[in-house]
Image 1 (tube, helix red, strand yellow):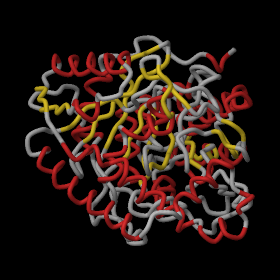
Image 2 (cartoon, helix red, strand yellow):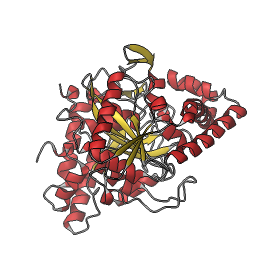
Image 3 (tube, helix red, strand yellow):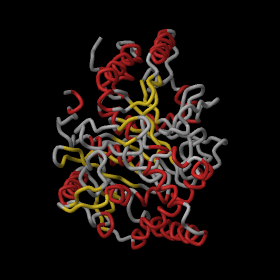
Image 4 (cartoon, helix red, strand yellow):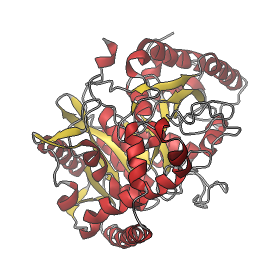
Length: 471
C-alpha cells in the first residue's frame, strides 16, 4: 500500500478508486495512520472512528466491486466539524456543556455525504461553540498549525483545516458564520468555500447565528471543493433558510482560465490596514489572473466600512439568544473567552439589532449594483500575519493589532451578505501561507471556483508544504 494515498486529492483518488486500482480501505488506512502519527501534536480531532471508518471503507470497496460506484466521494475519508450531527455519534460542539450529547439523526449534509459513499474518519476539533477565530479549545485541546506548531491554525473550523493540511483527511466539512471556514483555510494553506446562504442545508448543525450560518467544504484543491459542494448542496425542507434549488454541478463546468471574466478590486476597505507583505502577495496573484485572461477593474463600495458594526451586533445577539439559558444557569462551564463574548452579546438593544439589519439591507443593494459591472471581487482573506497560539494580537507592518478583529474584518462582508466566498492559497509570508478570497454574487459559486482554479493551476505555493508536524 502507498503510504501517501491520503495526500492525494479527491479528484485524483476518485479515478483510482473507480478503476479499482486503489482500494478505499488503503486510502482510509493511510489517513488513519497519519492521525495516529500526528494528531497528538496537532489536536485536529476530538473523536476518531478508527475501526468503524475501516468497516465503511470495506463496504465501499464491496459496492464498487459489485458495480455500484456512487461517484467522486465514494470511499473518500472525510473529517467532520464537531458541530455537525452524525446519528448516534457524540457531537460536542467543542464544549463542556455538550460533551456527552448524542444526536438521534444525521445532519442534512451528512445524509448527502452518506448517499455519496463518503467515509467519516471522525469529528474535527473546533473553537468552543464555533465562537472564535482560533481553535484554542480549553475542553478538548488546543489545535495547532501544521506549518508552525507555535502558530494558530485559525478557527473556528481549525481542526478541519489542520487535518487537510497534514493529510489526516482527504476532505472536510466546516461551518462559517463570521469566517470560520475561510480563516483557517487561509492560515493552513488549504481551500475553504463558504457557499451562498441557503445553498447548503444547516439542518442538524448546531446554530451560532441563524441568519449568518453556513456549511461548506475545506479541501486541498479547488476542484475538490467543487466536488464536495456538488454532493452537499440542494434544497432541504427541514432547514427554513434552504433555497429551493437543485444541487450544484460546479465540478463538471470548472474552468482553467479567466478569459472574459472581470475581477473587481475594492482598495479602500479590503487593502486598508493590511500588512504590506500580505497585500503584495495578493496583488501578485491579481496580476497572475490578469495574465490568465481576466480584466481587473477598480470598484468602490462605500458601505463596507459599516460591516463590522452590523456583523458584530447580529452575530453576538443571535448567538447569545442560542446560549441564553446556559449562560444564566451554568456560566462557569463556558471557556473564559466564549463566556465574555456571550455576555457582550446580551448588551445590544433591539434598536441596535434593527439598525444592523438596515445596514445589511443597504449594503446588499450596493454590492448587488457592483456585481452588475464585475464577476467577482478579489481581496486578502486576512489582513495580518499569522498569530501565535494563545496570542490576542497579530502583526500588521510591525504593529500589534487585535488578532480576532483583524481575522474577521475582511471576511465579514461576505458573511453578513451571505455571498459565496472562496479562500485559496496565494503565496507565503514568513514561510507561512497567505490566503486570497474570491467573493461572488449570490449563487455565483461557479465564478468564484473558476477564478480560484485558474490561480491554483499556477502553483502559488510552489513546492512548499507544511512540515512542522512531521518532526
